[in-house]
Image (tube, rainbow, N blue to C red):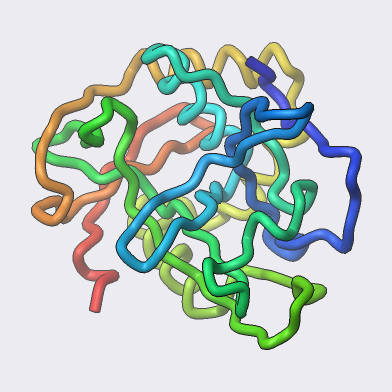
Length: 214
């Protein structure tokens, strides 16, 4: 598994350049790749993380269950991946945190980590992807509120700093983060707390989440 973001050679005007986000990818057919996403009744959507470290935590846990992923900057993958099923817009699921029940992170039915995510949709009537796709202000307000409850007021700077770390430090922090996780099964609709990981101090924070909904 790569511990640093991997780049696709097919460059385009990058999405998520104002607030960098990251995705999980794995080899696909004919030398291509598959991007990890979320399936819902209203269609599938790419799952995006606010830092490479959080994406790597997810990838590391997936590796424990036999699913191998690398991490890539969301702006480096094929923009068509973000197209909605009807082709009239762009969509992505922004992973805000891991749902918590009784102090433990919730698992999905397939054994992977569950997540609290906000679906973003950028509508367009063109036949080609629009030139930009960024986190909207309402989503940023959610993110700010969530991190402030964990005392992570400088989360943007902290997440940017992760990209400057050595591969060894990234690997060590990810390994310790996953080793310190406690997980459980349950109904995500009954979870009212979210887990955030502070990369600087290597601490898990559990904060109220229900106040950010509705």
